[in-house]
Length: 521
Image (cartoon, rainbow, N blue to C red; front, side, top):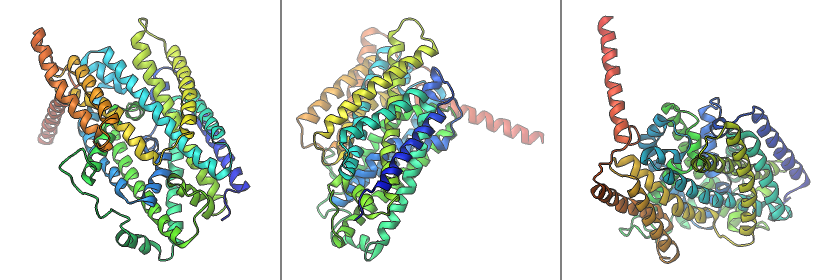
C-alpha cells in the first residue's frame, strides 16, 4: 500500500494546470451575448454528447456508484435504466419542439408556450435553487475523498476547485465549458476502464469470483427486494427504473445545464445522436462502476482494507493504495478536475438563466450583448463563491450516500418543474393559470411528502409532483377559460401535436416531390 505519493501529487498539480490552460485556450475568442451562453456554432455534436455525460455523472458516479454496490447490492444500478425511458421520450416529444422554436434557454419555452414572463422567471429561479444544491454536492464529495487520502484540508481543496471553475466559466463561456467537459469525460472513461481491468486481474478467481458473489452473497439483489409493488410510493425495482426515468427526463427537458447543450444546434439529427450516445455512455459506464464496487467487495475479502474505507471513499482508496504510482495521481486528478468542469457548467448555466430569463425580463430596456456577458460573468462569480460556502458547510456534516441524497433532491425540485413542461407540450388547452396552479399544488404536496411522509420512496417524488401538476393544472386551465370566456390555444409549434402535423405534411410533400422526380426521370 503505497498511498498517495509525491509523484502522484506532482501529476495532480500538472494535470490541473493543463486542464486550466486548455479551458483558457478554448476561451481565447471574445464571445459576447448569446454566443457566450450558447456557443458559436462550431462545437461538434460528439463533444456536446460527452459533455452531457460528464455533467450528469462525473464525480458523483465515480465515487458514489461504486460505493453503493460495494456496501450493498446493485439495486441503485436499476436507476440508470431509467434512461431507457427518458431518452426516447425526450427525443420524440421534446427535442423537436425545442429545435423548431430555437429557444435561448429551457424557460424561454415556458414564455413562448404560456405567454407568461412570470412563469419563465419562476422556472429559472427553481433551476438556480436546484443547481446550487447540485454544485455544492459536486464540490463536497471529491474534496472530502481527496482530503482523507492526501492530508490536505478539505476547505482548501474546495476553495481551489471553486476558483478554477469560476475562471472557466467567467472567461470562456459555454464553448470553453463544453470542451473542458469533453476532456474530463474522456479521461474518466479511459480511467474507469483501466481501473476495472486492473481490479479484475488482481482478484483471486477474477470476474468469475465477482459474478459468483451475485448469487452466493446476494450482491446483485437482496432476497427480499421487491421487483414490483402495487403501491408506487414504496421502493421496488420497477419504481426505481420508472422514477429515475422521470428524474432524468426532468433533467433533459427542464434543467438549463442540459438544455443549454441542446440549444447549441437546431439540427434534430445531431440532437438525437447526442442523446443516444449519452445514453450508451451513461448506462455502460454505470455498469462498469457497479462491477468495480462488487469487485472491491470481493477484493477486500481477500486483502486488508485501506485506511479510508467509508462507502463513498472506497473506490478512491483503492485508486490511492492499489493502483501503480502515477496512475493514482492521474485518476484522482481526473476525479477532482471533472468536478471542476461540472461545476463550471453549473455556473455558466446559472449565469445564462439569470441573464436571459430573469434579468432581461425585469429590465425594460433591451440589454446589449456586452451587458449580457458582463452580467453573466458577475453572476458566475457570485454563485461560485456562494457554492463554495455551501460545500464547506456540507463537508462539516455527514451524508452516507451522496448519489442517493442527490437523486432525492433532484426529484423534489426538478419533478415540480418538469410537470409544467409536460403540461405545455402535451395539452393544447393548458394555459398560464393552470401552469401556476399546478406548480403551486405540486410544491405544497412535495414539501409535505418530503418532510412529513417519511415512508414515501424518493424515487416516487417526480411521479407524485407530475401527477399533481397535471391533476390540478388541467382543471384550473378549464375553469379559467370558463370564467373568462376565453378559448386557450397554444401558439404554433409549442405543443407536440402541432409539430407532428407539420412534420407529416413536410414528409408527404417530400414524398410527392420524390415521386414526381422519379416519374420525370
